[in-house]
Each structure stands twice: as structure tokens, then as C-alpha cells.
Image (tube, rainbow over all chains, first blue to last red; front, side, top):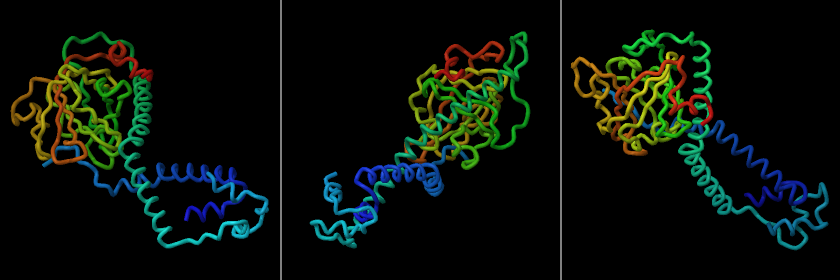
Length: 52
Length: 263
């Protein structure tokens, strides 16, 4: 899968590395900004209050 | 990074199909089901690890930094709104009498033991979504206001969502707990910890665990979950009121750097 991605990318090896790094940063940003907070809602929140 | 050397030779012209470029020596690679499945599983594992790292650490740092900045700003807004120094009335500290709408911020919590940049907004109510998961400290609406005779009780997360009370078990007897409002700073001293069941609402009583007794002291109660990463019990920290610092006189020396945004 990743090998195929490497083959699909254009340009010499360093261009591909740059593209992959940019892609990685974009993916990490999207995860932290949107995906993780969304998933977090479904991970049971820990109750911190005392209630009846 | 040895693979690029294979691809790089002249064989690969711009625009040439990538499989064509492979002809140089090595046989064309195929996508195997097992290979793809394996890579997907590794990716999924990394995502889970990243999520845990985000939930337990990175997000706390991000949220903590944001809330610190907001608290410093709020303090400056209160500074501007404050009137000229009033003659100090030697009696009781001022108490908020207005009704605060749910989820509205009205005070700030400062606990030097939790770190010099621990400066977190206190909002009315203990709603999980509208207060606690926004990493705010939630005030039990049925408990008293800061500085009032009785019990000022608040709750916050111990892990994730800012982990405001992550160091609640590190409190030492005599540690100062400050509550800031528009009027100034209320200084409490940490007294003791208590561990109760999730239904132990007695800790919120005006005299904690003494229902129906008329209060004479001013208390603060912090509640969070216990043990770490579990919600089986609640950890309770009590403090008693020491003194009040009017806003006109500036923040107490112990927390001056925190309040001014120099922490």
C-alpha cells in the first residue's frame, strides 16, 4: 500500500519525501483539529462530580 | 532510503508511467492482500496510539495554554472594570450575590501546587458537555459562592480534557488555593483529602458531611475522579478560608506572576 503510494508520487526521491512530509503534517493537523475531538465524544467521559 | 536510488536512474522520465520506470531491473511489485491488510493494521495501531497521546497529554497542553491566556485576559478585564481603591472593610469578604446563568464563567482558580501556569476559569454548573469537557472548573450550583460562609464546591477532570485536577493528590497541608473574582482574590489553605463513593454528596454540605448543621466557616471543596483513569470513586480536597485580597491592592505576591501572564 505504502510502496504503491511511493510509486504513484511524481518527481525525484526528495520531491516525494517533501510531498509525504507535507501530507503527514496535513493528516496530523486534521486528526488533532477535527477527528480526535469528534472521537473523544464517544469515549466515555470520566465522571468527576458527586451526585445522587 | 535505499529505494529511491533504484527509481532515480534516467529510466524515469517526467510523465513516464511509474510502472514503466520499474522495468530497469527489479520485477514489478504487486499489491498483496496480506500486505495491504498488514499495513492497514499498523496504521490503525498508530492512530490509536496517537489518539491516546493526544487525549492524555497533547490536548491538555493545548487546552491548558489556551485557558491560561484567557484567564490572564479576564483578570485584566476585571482590573479595568475595578473602581478606585475602596477603604478596606475589616469584616467579611465580598460575596457574589447575583445569580450566574448555567455554564457562564464567573471566577478563576489558581493553585500554585498545580504549576505556575495553572490558571483556570470557573463556570457555573457541573454539566459534562457544557462545562467540564471544556476543561473549565465547574461550580456546584447548590453550593455557596467564593468567600461565603459555607462551602464553595467545584469539580474538574483529573485526566484528559485539560486534566485540571491531575495533581490533586499532590496537595500538601497548608498549600494555598486562590479563587479570583471581579472583586479580588480569596485565599484558602488546603486542609485534607477524602475519598468517597460517587454518591457521596455530603461533601457538598455547607459543613462537609454534616448535613443540617449551620455553617460558621468558609470552606472550599474540590472534587475529581479516583483512582486515576477510573471513575469508581471520587477524590475530595478541602480547604479553609484564610483571607481576602481586594483587587485594588493587586494580586497576592505568591501568584502575581501567574495572574500577570508571566508564568
